[in-house]
Length: 211
Image (cartoon, rainbow, N blue to C red; front, top):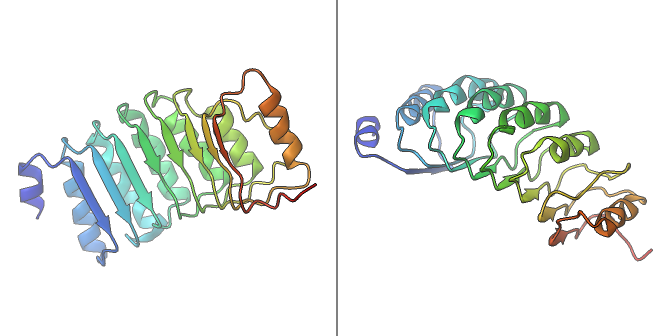
């Protein structure tokens, strides 16, 4: 498929539930890296794990017109996030980034935030079902570009155990986190702030009771 994909100005590529060996995945990423017309890439499933992906992801650096990038349930962690840090600054047209279902922790977030700092057209970031705690959440709040209006960090380990300003996003998804007893006060303080931009806030399944 490689020559056909490169010669037909492919804009969208979706691979979900694929079963590929290392050589096939390597060939696929090299081919994708040569498709400069690529605007939407969705991949979900096993594509070699974090170590291998860290070597494959730099191939996407030439895809400067990427608008939607979704890499889900792929085991992304340290090596992959370091690779993303190097290519994301080239994708200044990026609107949506979805890295749900991976193994991204607070240390990885530092690399992601660094890579996304210049993506001034980015509108949404989804990090559902990863391993983020309050420190990683704080880095996202402080470091993401002002253009980001939607942040989804559902099903992580966020507790809101200290004061965090939930002001900059219009849509914030926190379901399935382990919100501590003082978490509602953190949320209330942000909602009372006149600079708060929040329009939609999801909190279900977050340990918040009647009190």
